[in-house]
Each structure stands twice: as C-alpha cells, then as structure tokens.
Amino acid sequence: MEYETLAGILREQGWDVVVYDTVQGHKEPTAGHGVWIVAIDHGGQVLFRVTWPAGVPQGERFERGGHHYRLLQEGTQTLTVATEIASAQELPAVLDECAKLALSAQD
Image (tube, rainbow, N blue to C red):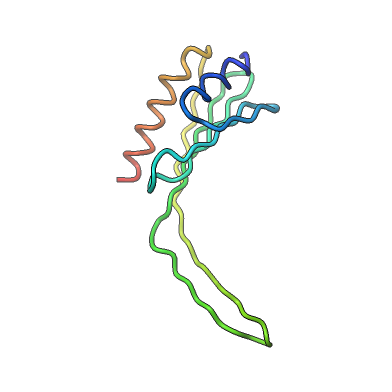
C-alpha cells in the first residue's frame, strides 16, 4: 500500500496526517462529534477510532496544604471500527462508511 497516496486522500478530506510506520489521520469534524483518528498499515488494515464526551464534565476547586487544586472529571465513549482495504482507491468509501457508523453511534 502506497503511503503517500493514502496520505493524499486523507488530506483531501480534511484530515491532519502523519506518516511513519503507518499512515495516521486526525480530524475533529464538527462540534460535538468528537475526535476521529484513523490508522492504515502497509497491509491495508484500517483502524478508525472515535472518542466523544459522554456527559457534562464535573469540576471542583479546593485548597489543601497551601496549594490550590482544580479537578475535572470527564467521561468519554469510544467507538472503534476495524476493516481492510485492498487498494488506496477503496479508502474514500471506507472512510464514508466509518463516518456514518461514528455519527449513528453518537445519536
């Protein structure tokens, strides 16, 4: 699998891309839909992971021993989709399907 071709496809779709041993993309599509991360290896294995807030964060401030502290508890939900592609040309359709799965999981 040609990494630069995969990276170009991701960039065209608005992903921030890093190429190392895998092609990795990061995207925050719209407010409230979380963070999307995709990784693709030489064999065409695709791992798509979405993380989004599971509720309203709970915060607390206090002082102890002369130091001020702020605590923030946040819950998240994660959806992971694993699949394979045989060629770079399959990537746009696979990303579209992963996006649909991600958005439906958040409803």
